[in-house]
Amino acid sequence: MPTATHLDFQAARGVPETHEWPVLHDHPVVDGGAGAGEDEVPVVDLRDADPAKVAAAMARAAEQWGAFLLLGHGVPADLVARVEERIEAMFALPASEKTRAVRGRGESCGYGSPPISGFFDKSMWSEGYTFAPANVRLDLLKLWPDAGPHYLLFCEVMEEFHKGMFALAHKLLGLFLSALGLTAADCAAAAKIADTMAASMHLNWYPKCPDPKRAVGLIAHTDSGYFTFVLQSMVPGLQLFRREPDRWVAVPAMPGAFVINVGDLFNIVTNGRFHNVFHRAVVSRESHRVSLGYFLGPPAQAVVAPLDEALTLDRPRPAYRPVVWREYMGLREKALFVGESALKMIAVAKDDAPQTPKLHETS
Ligand SMILES: C=C1C[C@]23C[C@@]1(O)CC[C@H]2[C@@]12CCC[C@@](C)(C(=O)O1)[C@H]2[C@@H]3C(=O)O
Ligand SMILES: O=C(O)CCC(=O)C(=O)O
Ligand SMILES: [Fe+2]
Image (cartoon, rainbow, N blue to C red; front, side):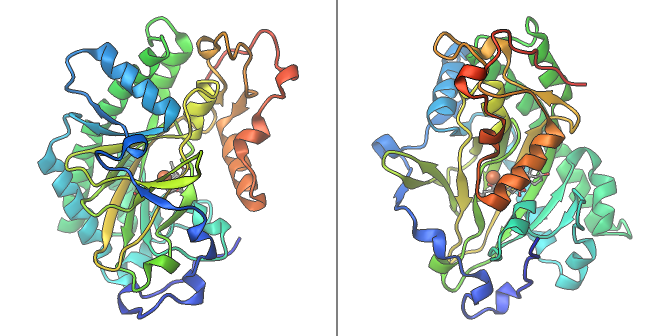
């Protein structure tokens, strides 16, 4: 697996060959802001008084886009501002301190490019930090072994954020399920999802880039889990891939909004109904940018499969075989190596699908 090339971004006067991506201009980029018609990124506002209307809007967005902007979520703006402040302060640390915390091979926590970067020859124009928010006090000792005031402030803010986000994630999961006509109360498999869902966080820092057309902040990918909250600061950069015609839709920076991305696993459990959105982050010449991904996924040993209740008249058979989550993540790696889709690797040929699908279960 190639390793990312370290570059002093602040000092760079141009984009070196190590960071130059030839595939960036594959498709046109269009604006996804208000008034963009077909290209307008859907907005869901949880303050809408009718929960059925909210669930319907979420279902539509999840099916057609695999993404939407979420407003009225109740996470206080001042908390989000403090989270952004801590992210900025963390990436502003000297390289000698950040590299102390480098995420090693096979480790899930630490400083460095996101795991996906290991599958490409080229390096991205970004730095990252991954950790489990439920374990932040232990994980962040890697960066701040003396557990001083910066460590304490970082941990306190991230814990407060995690508390609000985890509650919000459960609320959103309930709405997603009700959009499928399910409740955790009457579907054991859905209840298991809610009981075992865990969060991980990945922080991104995208420095200013002297030649943004030749570099990429985060290469195009789908997220693996159920769904992700993306906090993009007021500097936009997130783009969603849309078909017919193939294009990249730039997600507008909307004050107070989270972007919700549907991941591979939601595509699996909904039997292909929710779209796992392919997305990327681009960089800018004028401003650096920070973003945060709050990922919701299952335990590594969970067996995942389409929910029985997600089988519909037009898709009465499971589209995917059951798979242990750890195995699926391994298939994602294999797929990245060969430029394939991991979902295709677990897809059941239409005629081979069993009549009686296996129950979704976690162990
Ligand atoms: C839970 C996670 C999702 C993620 C892998 C991770 O363990 C933490 C980092 C996440 C991230 C962020 C950037 C894109 C991505 C594909 C990657 O390489 O690291 C996602 C991973 C994912 O969704 O599988
Ligand atoms: O920076 C962004 O807007 C995208 C982040 C993202 O896709 C991720 O962390 O998985
Ligand atoms: Fe992502």
